Image (tube, rainbow, N blue to C red; front, side, top):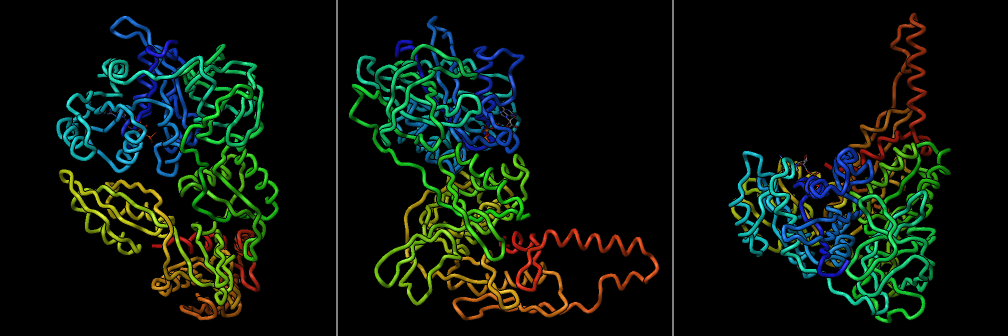
Length: 597
Ligand code: GTP
């Protein structure tokens, strides 16, 4: 296809504003997929994505469209993940296209993620077409929302297209706007090959599939390509496009978006944002700004049943093949046995992986408290990156600690602002900005990431009845008074319950934790002290008193079946316990104790 008849675009939207529904409509309107094959939400390919209603992996579709001007166009849509954890992937996908549709729910207005993603689009120099969706709903307020787009984002929204992705109104206008308002890609077919690696994933039949955007040159089956970040060379088996099914074609030229396969064994061998060129006569200039995505949140994953450790290892290895930003290494815990310390892009990423292990591989897991990476500066001047509170070096060797901070943007209706400010303040936030757009406030906070990884998002949703939206970016490390808090049960430290906390909040956290544990640990035949400690110093303490009677005693001797049932129940309960010294701690205790309220 000649460059003038190609348009490459992405759709920017806040979760639930209708991105997937609109994409489906565009595909349907152009008959890219026969109606009978049309599954709802064509682009969300994984089941888990469909269930949770979130888009995780970037996907793409090539749409052929005959414009009202009589010409045939190829429209390439790259779907981008909507969640903040995947911001880096969003930024790469954005660089692979020239324009964006900015979809805003006309009953809701601009939200924090709309902002974050639209800024990425602006940074990538996109032409942006605003689309007001859900105009079929009575609560739709197009004028107000258009004005808000102008006020908050600062782009012209007078020509915003009014759409109902549900009923199909405005879909044709949207396709025309893509052709008429978005720029055609530029590129030189005769220059050496330069292609951007936009995404990659593992396919059971074809191996690793690489999504590429050709900048210059041509890519054909049989070519030998080189990944510029690693210098690895591969012969190309296939090139093709997504219709959205994979369709092999002879070659991909400049401006085009498609896939290649090249007997690449694992997704880890491909790096999002890398430049692909030919082995011989390749380009010498890599695309700018390449950096591999780094995990920022770590936690331990342990099988509830120790016998499932090998299965867990298997499942983690399989998932890692398909997810370069998920890291893992073996970990042993005195409390939990053998497991893995895993790194994730964020909390959602963590939840998705944990769910997949539990559901697809059928392994019940204990997840330890998520932790960020602390920088521990030792007295000898060296620095270590601490991924696990259990590895905290002896205090006498430590000079100071630094923790990662984020810039959080929260948008919220006026009436909840007070609660949001309080929440941020409670989490050691520093207010950076507060502005209004109509009846919504936009507040920007500098917050410690570790205060956010536990349950910040849940708390935010609950204090604002679901009306707040939230987005963040990392801003760097800062020193603070941070300590490791250990939990001792019957005088033995339970490593899986160690957490890093701010010194000023340690007593409060420690108290909450021991109180919870007191309720969660069943009574034993002896009394059990439960303590929170920093270094050797106990900062909170509870005592679980001893059990007085045999549990079966209250069954009045007579009823044998009842007694048997009770014993069986007790036995089943035991299986879910972790023996710790002389104390049995139920698995729920680990999960519940680590949640804060
Ligand atoms: P993520 O995949 O989570 O990023 O969400 P999304 O932005 O892709 O939203 P999605 O397309 O899944 O739509 C969210 C909800 O809004 C769904 O229940 C849709 O059926 C509904 N919806 C989308 N467009 C319209 C519309 O034009 N009118 C109405 N009434 N509902 C719509």
